[in-house]
Length: 65
Image 1 (cartoon, rainbow, N blue to C red):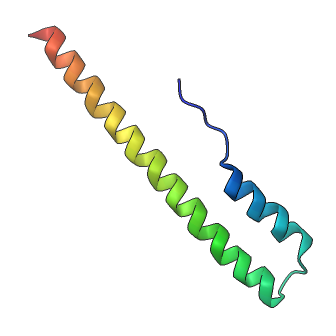
Image 2 (cartoon, rainbow, N blue to C red; image 1 turned 135 degrees about the vertical axis):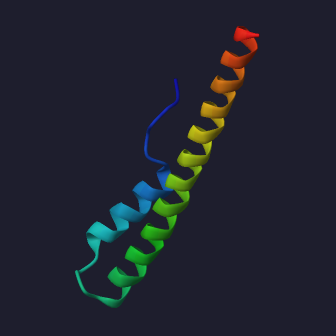
C-alpha cells in the first residue's frame, strides 16, 4: 500500500501561514505558494494512480490470455 501522508514542505508552509496575520501581504503570498505545492502534490498522486490502474489492467489481461 502507498503512504498517504502529507509532504513536509506543505506542512511547513501551513505552519508558517498559521503564524501570519490574515489578509496581510505575506499571508497572500504564502497561500499562493501553498496552492501551488498542493496542486503539484495532487497531480503526482493522480499520475501514480493512473499508472497503477494501467499496470493492474495489463496484469489481468496477461492472466486471462
